[in-house]
Image 1 (cartoon, rainbow, N blue to C red):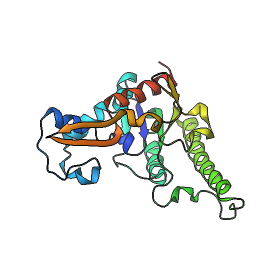
Image 2: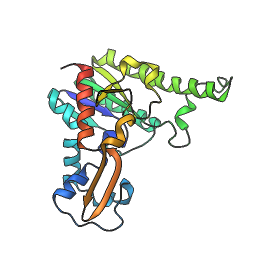
Image 3: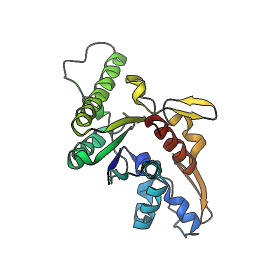
Image 4: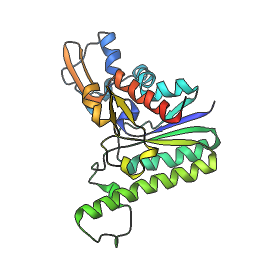
Length: 228
């Protein structure tokens, strides 16, 4: 079966969607459980992983196209981490790939190390100018890499932007969203409306990742971008 690759951080991984399964099962939880994955990662079972993958936009989109979903096993990470995982994934699967969805995460992660793209001499101008140039360099590196591999292996690709750091670099390549009649260029613009907010074992669980309805918004938007 042909593959569809989803490459991104915790949003692409499906963070928090297993809370719905825990709620359905009326699972008893220790008081320490919260919205951050490290505080409860030891409670997440293989069945929970399967559940969150099925209800994630990655599962919804791959099911729509009849493609096998492949994504990073790691939850989170910087753009640098995502890129380092992306290249061997694409290189390994090669001609089996039909589509690639790359989700940009925050450039502030891990001391802005993503902004090391470019030569040390390329630091002239104001802070804002240098910053914007480094963001552009990072996007161009990702885009040139995907452009090369898409030509080599004949797949199509697009981008998701979390915080709005990157979409202006090449608007046509980024998925757009229509939420309640409002056009959004990046998904943090509607995240608060679609965050995970539920009760499990009489505990309020608020996880600032997309809930099931938010996953459908992303899924439908990706399908609209590629075409039905």
